[in-house]
Image (cartoon, rainbow, N blue to C red; front, side, top):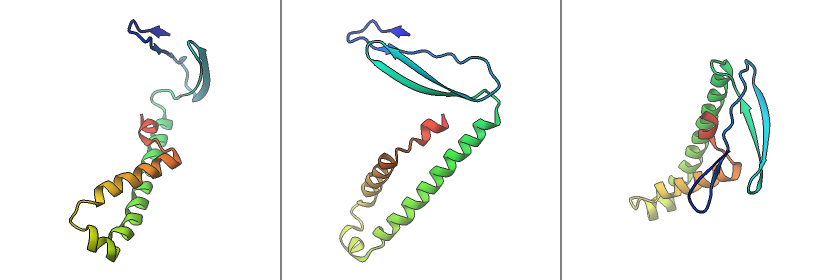
Length: 115
C-alpha cells in the first residue's frame, strides 16, 4: 500500500496477481484507515476468456441502446411531443436523463467490464 504526502492522506492499494494460466477470483481485505473489501477476478493474458467477456459486454451495450432507442422513439413520435417540443432541442437532454436512470437502476458499468 502506498500513502500520499498531501493532506488529507490518500491510500492506494497495489495488487500483483500470481502467474497462472487459469481464471480465478480473490477477495482482498485491508483496514487502513477504514476496513474495505474488494473482489478481484484475474484473467491470464492471451486467454480467450477476455474476448468472450468483451463480446458479452458489447452485446449488452447493443441491446441497451436498441431498447432505449425503440422506447424513446415512441415518446419522440407522439403527437403532443412533436407539437410542443419539436425543434427546441429537448430530445438530447431527455435521452441522456433516461439513459442515466436506466444505467443507474440496473447498475450497468459496461466500460469497467470492457477494461
